[in-house]
Image (cartoon, rainbow, N blue to C red; front, side, top):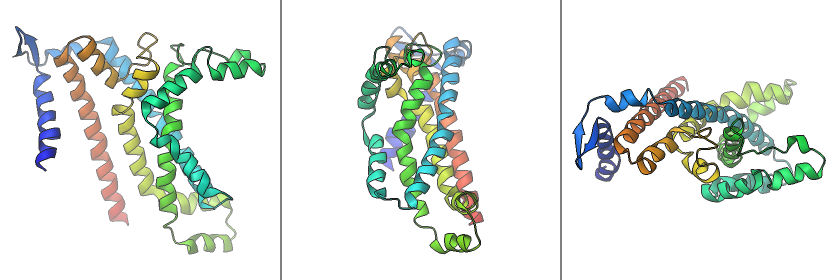
Length: 273
């Protein structure tokens, strides 16, 4: 508890206090809410929020894919244990490694575009990371590829704890695959789905810096800048540490709200159970 207090609580309080300061003559001087006023006038701040919201859209896609794949593996198709391992491998890879590999794949003359040109699909060969209109979506696709395996393992573990008699009874009643999926699988996995969604939303808010830093550097222009990268850009590249800490506080507030929501949902699910 002492370590947590020093590393997390003290640091968080220090960031909040510093967000109301600015550097003057080598010392921090109190300026009230000036950093926040400047922040809410900063166009880059709204661009970063928009990009984070776009990445939030990855969450329902990851959740749906993970749930479907988990159900397929739960039915124990031939080689399901091998497939489970393969699907989980991307999740344990280091983010910089994934970012570098996909940068080579998705660049204008990269592996993907070369393949598309070779099969006569030249119109689809675009600059996936250099086009401001699609760069953030390309990064999102890479994040989905890396992360959804964690959801598969979570959902599969939950499904394996479900009483098999529920599915057997449904089959006796003539239920098809979709009816079992909607009436049994989703309700049984609901608490884990809720947990996975909230955790993934927090990830999309405060965990995507490495992808952006390695793959796009926030560009082209600022089309892939997210709040995390804005903090880095303002503090280290712009030497405006107190302003960057104001952005940190915004991220902290949003993450706290998501955590509170997750706790409320978990408590509600526990009470219903």
